[in-house]
Amino acid sequence: MNTIRGRVSSGIWAQDLHFKRISERTLVLNLNAITDWFNQQPHFTTSKPKH
View 1: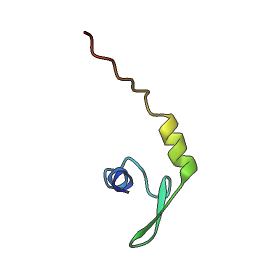
View 2 (view 1 turned 180 degrees about the vertical axis):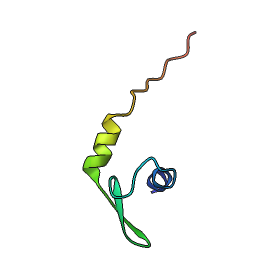
View 3 (view 1 turned 30 degrees about the vertical axis):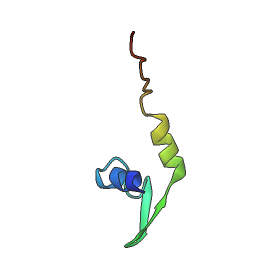
């Protein structure tokens, strides 16, 4: 929930696209739009430390 709140409050996820607020304490997520957003994120890899 903290991740969702963070993305909403920072404007990463847009109201009426990624979520809708249906009451003061309730958000409904649009999983299709969130999946599209996820698929557009750059791929991140970690490198192993060199010995």
